[in-house]
Image (cartoon, rainbow, N blue to C red; front, side, top):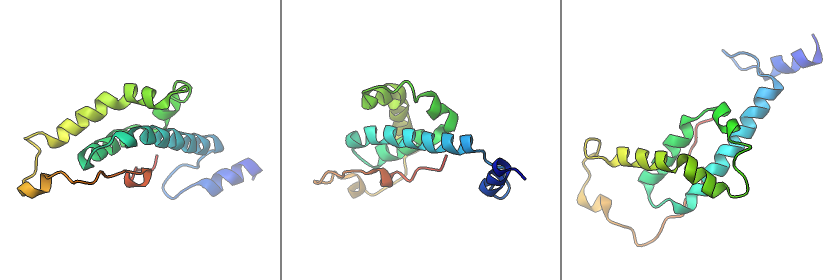
Length: 129
C-alpha cells in the first residue's frame, strides 16, 4: 500500500468513502470561512430568534459554497457577509416568528431584558460541514 493510500484509509470514517487530504483541507477551510461569517453577524444579534435564524442559514450551506466565497470576501468581511446572507437571515427570522408558526408562550416570556446579551461563536452550535 502506498503512503498516500495508507493516509486515505486512516482518514476514512465508518460508512463513508475515504477522505483525501484535499477534501479534509477544504472542509477545514470552509469551516473557518463560515465561522468568520458568523462572527461578523454576532455583534448585531439582538435575541434568540435572530441567533436561531443565523444558525439555520449558516447550516444550510455546504463546503463548496463556502469555498466559492473565499476569494470574494475581501478586506471588509462584515459588509460582504451582510450583503450575501443578511436578507436570508432576516427572512428566516421572520419565518420563525410568523403568526402561523408562533408557539403559545406566557406574556412574560416576551418581556425585554434590561441587560443586553452578548453572543459568542460557541452559542451557535453549528453543524459540522
